Amino acid sequence: MEIIDFDNHVSLNHRIIAVCSQKGGVGKSTTAINVAAYLGQYGYKTILIDIDPQCNSTSGVGINYDSIGYSICDILISNKDTNKVILETHFRNLKILPAKWELSNAESELYSLSGKEFRLKEAIEKIENNYDFIIIDCSASLGLLTINALAACKEILIPMQCEFYALEGIARLLETINFVKSRFNSSLDITGIVLTMYTRTRLSNQVIKEINKYFPDKLFKTIIPKNVSLAEAPTVGKPILAYDPFCRGALAYSDLTKEIIENKVRIIKKEFSILPRKFIDFWETGAPPRHAVKRY
Image (cartoon, rainbow, N blue to C red; front, side):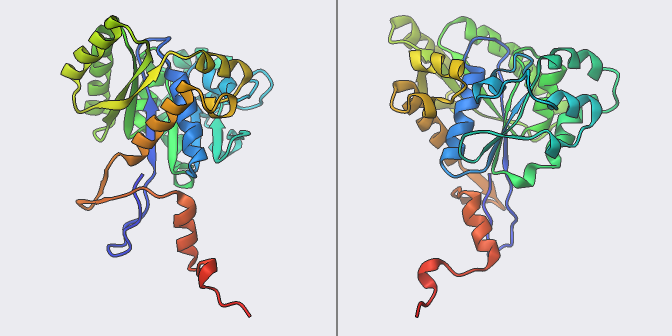
């Protein structure tokens, strides 16, 4: 997200981040849910988009996908108004575009539609100015749903489990990223790789050293530990900050979110810090701050 430069009259831009991995079980949805929840907690207007047929992000914020009406599938296939699909959550500044089981059939239906790679991008364009952060939980497969997410986003966050097979798997993901970048989204970039499910073993530490060799400038400092509370939180439909806010997993996701927020963003070759939209909205009203109002 970029912040207004009043001297150069630069408008605010949001950040659209796809959480993407070609491998299941690496903490992809856990990362999407908890980063989105912490962004909201820190004052940023955030929407979580669930484009994974497993619907983990939907259930992970306490929404029963069997009982909802419209879903992301209706947007992708039937061009349903995005605003009519958005749902509130119980968590601060966090909304969601939910998924339902029928999303598993959407990929085959998309192939017959025009502009099939840009359906999600078109939907996001209708709402993007309302949010500071848009977090997309991608499918674990590298099919058309994931291509839609990569064509729509500006940044990619890659969760990688602390195991040697992760290095093999990421090669295919990078091929897909390069393909999408060359065909559909030239501004696509990897915002960072986050290591997940870390345990204090010699093997895990060796994996970290190996990954550092390949991605020295893209690896987040924060490492997400393997944590029982992180595994339990989705079963009760809560992000970790609402389930066990002082556990090691919660503290790690809090730190990771701060790293994401603090990523340097350039506007007209100048760097700016990131401020919540509530401050920007207040400034745009032109109203004086409360401490500047004369009281009688």
